[in-house]
Image: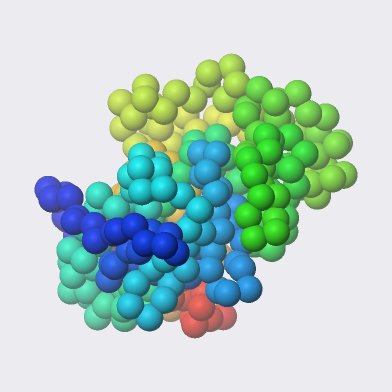
Length: 301
């Protein structure tokens, strides 16, 4: 079982310029970060940059030959909001070095060298992954965009596109499920979204208090919510509660694990158990590298 003790914060090489903020970092690639299945609320611009919304701020990130250009936010906003969002307090070089002791994971980490696990806002993540169940990424992204535009608050305009915040739980809790189905095209998830929003609005989830729970207890709590099964609960644990030992299992990661590690077809639960036993507290990181590598290279398909 792999173990890694987080002791040091990674030093960040970032400075202001006339174009925006310039970040030099060997474990940061916008494509790897936004295309590894962990989030859906972003746009790819014509110049290849990624525009995303987090905590009411619009950020644009562009990979260049020698650095990363970060636009539309100040240096103070970067440190106040996006340092944590991009998990920049974690040294991914050490994590990749540990994972790379396994040859398969070395290939995967080299392939997705710039992945960082985003620390996302709780309610938006819960609803986003309820929508994600048995759904395609393009449809998920479109549903989240429509929900934000109809029920969120206007933030501003960037690169010719208007942006809205994800709605507050008390707002989405009052929406007619049929309206969600008609406009946001969420299908059978409509009632689940509204009911889950009501639970969050009523205080069922409390990030600070929930962090006192063991991961198993917190997963059981999340699964009391409508639309949240084992996989969605693991996604919320990994991408919001920072439980990096979790290993969400979907169709892609199941195929990858069966092809590269297990060697034959097994139930999802066995994939989950195998990954947790093998990867230990690095399971969440391994999942992201393997998911991105496996999906992009169509491993097991």
